[in-house]
Length: 320
Ligand code: ACO
Image (cartoon, rainbow, N blue to C red):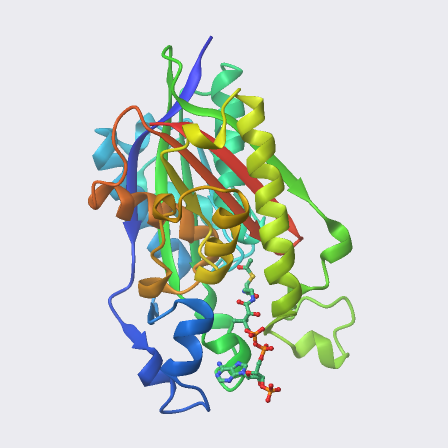
């Protein structure tokens, strides 16, 4: 039986940084409000499009795996902020890395990278593909209304990528769970000018809107439920988990999630302070940072989970 394992990883975070104090110079907010409620200290702001961030992350991931673009059988790019709707931006990345293969975008919001990892695992385990490039990339700050403090303080830009390859060893993505709750689709949304009635005021509403407290509760419940299911699927218990890499939307969500799951807080990887919420990019960026910090070691069991607009949720168990 073939398994699908991560052999390369890379990230791209734009150099420009906007701190909480910087934000407070032009909107009515403060570090004292943002930090304790979210864990965010700063975010990176991109002056280039999502596909460019994705390309740099992809090139790093290919280099780490020792592969060329031409070795890749499929590119799956998770984003909710593509720089073009048609063609998909996976095609732009494909051209930039010189790959000849299938390439497409998916939008599962903040759960997008784990959705992509699940699809990649399915393609590899069925024998259809040998090497899949999965990317999570966002330039959400482009869509923010910088006068709305409720949303302006939360998001950042960035990209992360993983090369997923076939292996005969029982390692890599042991199991994954994907879900969507359409009853909650109005709780978190962004029109991006795509309303069907182009003369309605909503058609001009490009901005992210959400019910923060409702998301807070549902994110903890959703990620907790799928994490339990995915551990059961591979006959593992919470004690077997060495590291949890959750979507980084709010540090308090992560704290509450691991505390409800009765997992040691030290096992949760948190890097939201540096990046804010980069949606589909938070998990691959966190994987890169965890590796750089020595938090991921060979043989370890990683639980990753995410929650986002849709309302999507996802979880995966990865044997490193
Ligand atoms: N600075 C200062 N004050 C603010 C700010 C700000 N940036 N934003 C809101 N406030 C004010 C509000 O106006 C309100 O004032 P009022 O009491 O006078 O009316 C007060 O602060 C409280 O606002 P709430 O929205 O109730 O604040 P809450 O404690 O719920 O925290 C937050 C908001 C941080 C967004 C929280 O709900 C949250 O983290 N939710 C989940 C994460 C989330 O929604 N992420 C969005 C993407 S979804 C995802 O990635 C899964």
